[in-house]
Length: 451
Image 1: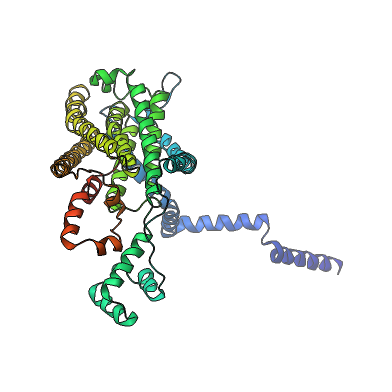
Image 2: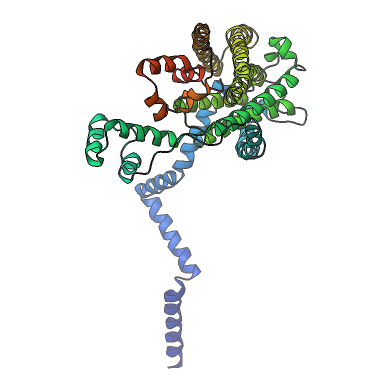
């Protein structure tokens, strides 16, 4: 009787253990053995488990495959060169792709420095030059027109204008004038444009000066074949690394600030231009074409600060200084980009590199991008020459003004209604053609401020 009670208590303990904590260790071991035996006896189950395990690792495997394809050594590097050969050592430092991440925090710092510069340096300079902070004339308040402007269209067609004319009992010309003033109301003042140009002028002048100071000590400035001797085993110096990262960070900052800067007609062109510049700088850094890359950057920086200086003189209404700076800018731009660029840069990237290193896939891509850049140089130079000739022809009638301050079409500011009403139609046509100067023509075409 006592033995039966012991057996009953043992059975109850085993049952409670199963309910509370699952099977015992021995039970789990027996269950695992039975599962293994079942898999061995059923090959279909084994294949199913293998497929499930493979699917769980598929995303990581696929990403690894994409990265391996993108960083294919046979595309990026010359024959018989691997990424392992370009790892940093105690003796030498080489460009590494992860170095480019430094450009993002530096771009943010540059943007913050710009805000401080414009607020505490550029703005006081503009006010000292008596540049007005007020913008275009504001449109009179009207709830109906404001609703159309903000919710429907900023450029109403003829049918909508006639409907608004009947609704408000205004004539169509008055409504057109209201929409023009309302559009201009969102445009920046001359003070804002001066501050932006002064910031760009300061940075371009600084980075160009740094590039000249760095390159005058570099052997590849005087003999471009040094760009390819021992390539790609060319060590990366701290000065060269700083120059590259600063240029890249500045263009990233322009990419971000373009959405808050003065909106211009060539917004899309400039956006693509900044992307292309960033791509070229990144491309040349990754495969260690940094020596020839520094030559390209310095050559392009040579004329940028001159254009910004001409625009500053334009906004300050220093017309003779503006004319002089624009002429110097045009001469430097054309001589560097139609003269030095093909003779100096393209000659070494196409012919000297072919002779010393030989072509490989990324070599073709790099040179194709540089040739496309030369095509843009030709178009921009043609536009500059055409505008200069037109301005000189009009100068015979006392109207020479290549960067007319009141008609900066890159800022897309339309003429005010008062000007329109007070100007006869014939005079209006002549005035527009005479004063729609360099900025307007160039931006309406292909020209960009930076390059």
